[in-house]
Image (cartoon, rainbow, N blue to C red; front, side):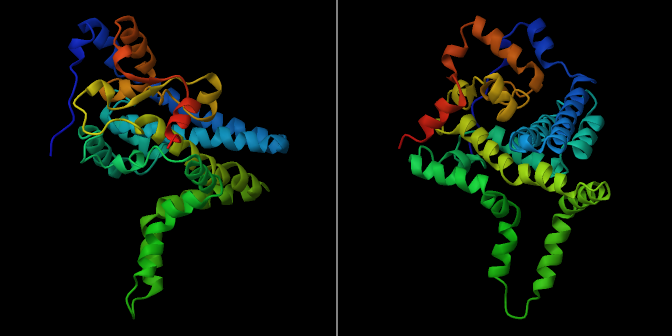
Length: 307
């Protein structure tokens, strides 16, 4: 196995610039996690008060559910808080219980990004596809088929491969244990909303975004970050893509500066809130001209569906 080529921060930034960009914060990560949950809470409240805006709130909430994952991703790099213990607990309690299983997988992705050993390569390798093929993928996302496959596909495969005499209930119990955090958290949420007479709000304004919009924006994120990027390239400035996001795209598709993905792969020690600053610094130095950039998510989708 050959790891992907790396850049040295000192080749692009002065010591003072790098100290500014890579500085950990004891407050900003906490503030972003709080912001994410406040946006979700506000969107749920608007959906309850004005049900006509539920379709828009589904998109906003689904995007912030992705936002929680993005913040957990920063925690996987140890960037969400200056203290590692607080960093991990913040992510585990408020962003996603999968932190400890996600971290080694994700760090392997960084080590071998766009190389043959990259575990995420399967997400970007199929592109470009036809417009019809992309349309079918989007339809599966918005109808919940992608969510069901990702959440319960492994269980379905084990049930199909069940040996004679093997108990179905044993397999179901094992799956319940594996996904106990998911079921417990959503069960408690549904119970709490039901006690308030708002069970439907949990279904429509938490579960529905998770089942529909979250899979779609996760797919768009994966396409934008690595699709149509040359495999096994030796140029570390072109292992990922930065997609310039409008205010609307940030609200509905790309939370917490996830669109600055080329900068993130070049400099994994930079917290997400400093990626825009890193981009501006690199632009002033003329470096961004050598990087993979696209002006927006629609442009990336057109490229990805040009087969």
